[in-house]
Image (cartoon, rainbow, N blue to C red; front, top):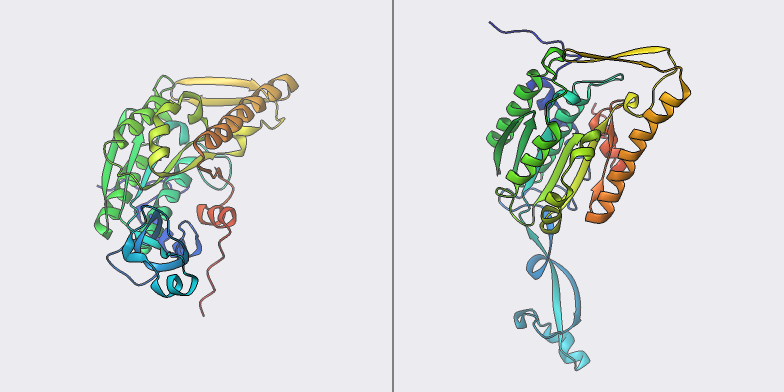
Length: 316
């Protein structure tokens, strides 16, 4: 018997499949989509005999002598070499959270749904660029992975993991004592055994994850890969409305806050701002991208606007 889930609370495989139509709007990668099937579309930082000529410059010790430009050398009487932008496969790996703390939202989406659809959208975009894609979905005490491959089967396996983890979320299952931040740390430790150096790594997690994050786990990952951080938040995470008594329920625990009290609202807002500043410091420290997402808009619109993409042309 199939249990029907409320589409306002949970995502579905159909919804994650539908994010594919937006993947061509997003400049997530440095190269436009082309028709190659076997090679990835990401520029590597390496210099060598690649497919795209870049420039001619003076020869330096250690340069490959096969790249010497003899015409320019003869004309200038100084040895010059050709430099290429080498295109290499850059596996894309996603670490996506589906935990009880994400099962919350006061706007268009629950954070858990927005996180799942963000992961799906990035995965579709990677596959459209003919790169290998894989990922890891974690929650309270759980962590499941799909190793990067360049095929739809791997992507569909990742989407299935997202859907299964998302459907397992429910208010009555939430336990405030669950070490959710430790689950992220566990996922980061495990990912170091899977991710190849030179990959593009996306981490989609709750905005509050910064509080329990072991930042030292990210240093080697950021040092050998391109890292993009996407913390997800809801406007109610950042500011309490002045609506009197507000009840917060998590599992069997209930907390009532007097949101009409200025000091309470100020302390609540300060906690979010401290997390926001911590994310910014972490991104500067790791020299990585930081793209916060909030529940007021779809993932593709936020990524497109933040990255300078363009809407897909209307089809007639």
